[in-house]
Length: 265
Image 1 (cartoon, rainbow, N blue to C red):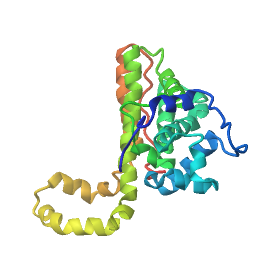
Image 2 (image 1 turned 135 degrees about the vertical axis):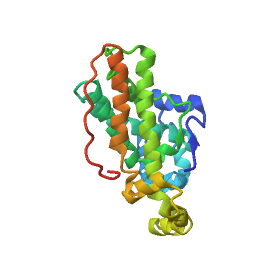
Image 3 (image 1 turned 135 degrees about the horizontal axis):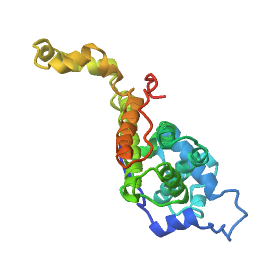
Image 4 (image 1 turned 90 degrees about the horizontal axis):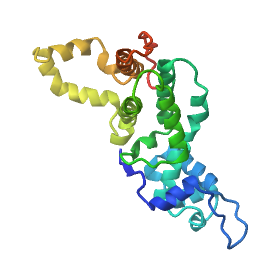
């Protein structure tokens, strides 16, 4: 995946659009556009065609307007991407606030919500956020997630670290899964052909008994399901946090078995 830097445009202008009340154009005919309409159209284009297809001209076509009219609302593509990311983060905030249960049940639900978000909007994984844009929806989403681990014995540093651990796992596993899903289209080689060609070279090594453990898991079919184990990983992350919570004297619910693997749904 080709990466795009969050906050790669005019930082102050992006923040003004995220947190302020955008001024409507004062010149020309009364517009039928809005920042919100442009952002939603851009998200639809990115969902359907990928981030590489996103351009101001393509969005204008989707809206049935001239490309130059978009610049009356958004300075450019970089700032628009900042708005798109924050808009997507806002999709699950209301649902997240409604999640009940103990800390583990809430984090479990949040992890699944984030996984589903990436499946809906895979282009989100192309936005590098080492320096994240602090938009209202992104902040609200993080705030509600941190609230799940408040009051269970962790200090503030540990609370934030627990959330970062969870979100990093979800994003990392989602990225690998989506890359695997898109590999055939990207390379022009089907999955069956991919493994068949590699088998021509790896097969003799396996037959010679030089890779006994990989042979063992391969014969069990584990390689065919290695990207179907999101639930397994989610539960193990939560198990690890439960150990920490217990060591702080907090309420650490016992581990629960994950549901059967269901692919990338």
